[in-house]
Image 1 (spheres, rainbow, N blue to C red):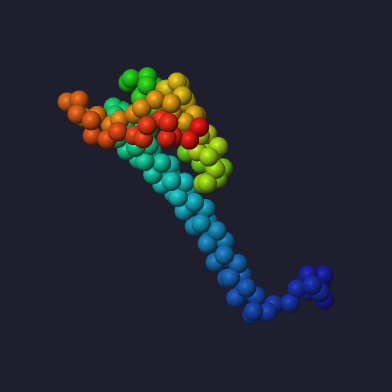
Image 2 (image 1 turned 90 degrees about the vertical axis):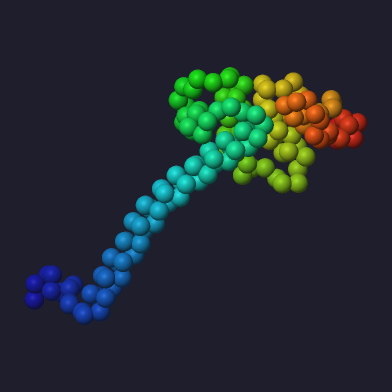
Length: 150
């Protein structure tokens, strides 16, 4: 008996186990490929969300420009609009750490979104606000500052 034969005996059940191992390896490979796709889709979804939400606020950057800002490429556009996109990206990055019922985390998110854009960044407002149409007509007026938490 050779040393190899001493430790090795062929068993038909091994072929089934080898096949199972091979199938598991293939599943891991597919999962790894899909996770890369999922990360790409998550980033794309975030870019679309940031573009839409900043556009509602009057941001003039195109979807391509928003994508370029997020990817660190130079963009020709209003500095305020570029900063708004950068701020939104940072706020999204911190989102998993926010407690949904925490006033401090609400103000922290607000600070990220408005950093260098307004004077009261990260604080409850102390002035009146309104939504005004292009022709000057007030569409909605916010609660008076006295009714906002301090």
